[in-house]
Image 1: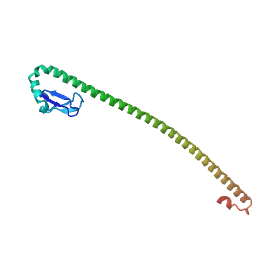
Image 2: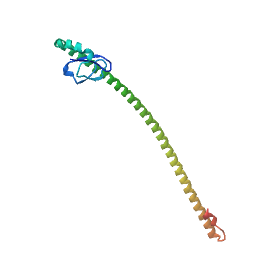
Image 3: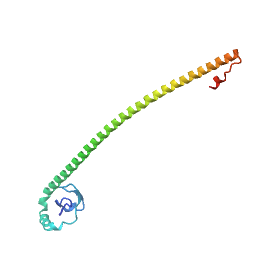
Length: 162
C-alpha cells in the first residue's frame, strides 16, 4: 500500500501496490497525478497498520476508488458539456454575423447591378445621340454638296471640317 497526498489539493490518497507508477485523476480535484513508488514519510506508520488488515479493506477501498473515479469522470463530463455549449453559442453568433454580412453584400451587389444598368442605358442613349448627330452631319454635308452642284461658287469646306 502506498499513501501520499495530491500535490495540487493535498487530498490524502491510498493506493495498493498494483497502482504504483500509474497516472490517475485525483479523487478530489480530478487533476492527473502519478502514484509514487513509496509511501510519503508522514504516513509510513499508518500504512503498515493498514497493510496488515488490507484484505478486509480491499472491497471498501475499491468501492471508494470507484466512487471517486466516477466523480472525476462526471466532473470532466460537465466540463466538456459546458465547453460544447460555449462552442455552440459561439457558432450561432458567427452564423448570425455571416448571415448579416451576406445580406449586406447582396444589397451592395444589387446597388452595383442597378448602377451598371443605369450606366449602360446612359451609354446607349449617348451612342444613339452620337449616331443621330453623325446622320445630321452627313445630311448637312449632302445638302451643301447638292447646293454647290447647283451653284459652283458657294463654299462648303466648313461643313466637312466641323
